Image (cartoon, rainbow, N blue to C red):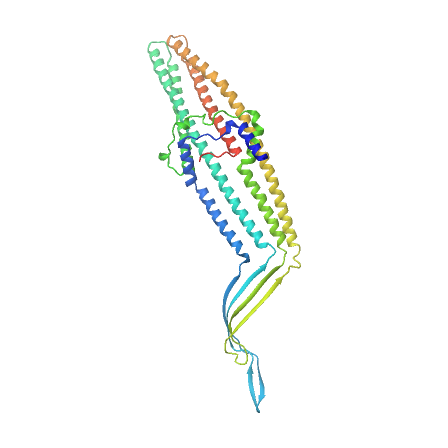
Length: 439
């Protein structure tokens, strides 16, 4: 009942983090990444290997049947003579040519739980491998999403930069006409040309970043750049709705404690340490086993060269008596590893809480910046419109117009950058709380 109440509380407290449909093209990219990313295939192979090792551990209580055959020539061998009917008769107790062929079986009867402990440890290793696979798949989806929206951010940045280039080119034409009429200086034209070339170089830089981002998507998804279908969804930075409020920190921490993948893997290490302690506790226990064999061999009197059928069976009990404190020291080391694993869980929880609080602080800062920039962009655009009119009327110099244009450019790019950063903040909060992206 308590877990149900917590779940209901989280649903009410975290409306902004509820799962929302992702853009279809982003979902396709995530599916492609899950199908093609090499690291996932490697971890799937490790899971299969772990499952095989589990089956190997199960065979610890299975009998082992062995076929044996041997030949040995001996010389000299034990001989003696006995007087019989008035004459000495030579008697040989062992043949020169010794042959032995048999089937032997060794079957553990009871091992005081060692085999079960090994199976449990192997199962724990497989579970850890599965959780690591899920963690990689989970983080991969967020890497793809970040790269996807990074492409959208850079595409929008190119649009802004193209606007800057067009404006600079228009200003060159205006100032060139004024130069012909004697209303401007050649210095003004050169200044605008420098700004025009600088804007083009900046566009090259943005295009380079865009190409690199697409190369990253190729690595993550296995899709070549030409096959990456990135639509309008990447240009929208409101895909996840409003960002969470600052007073939701505690609710986010509770959600993260229940769903964060790193915590799951850290807890797996604790379970592995517990299994190791159990194995070390059983290492010094006795071992009870059955052994038997049946086959043919020679060396039996009176005809020592004739192979005869023989059989043997018995039970053995092996009890460790002294091992130089080996088992105690191994158990002590395992206990230290257990404590370290538990400290790692505590550290993961602390880092998780720190990450959530820092991200919320970034959210608050970016929201405040965006609120201020919304006003700044409107003011800068209005100032630029006035400056263009005044330039045409010869009231201001081109340098003053350039200052107004630079203000608009910087305001728009800053607004776009903070919108993108706010989106990344929301993605990070979803990742920290363990919300799965895609289907």
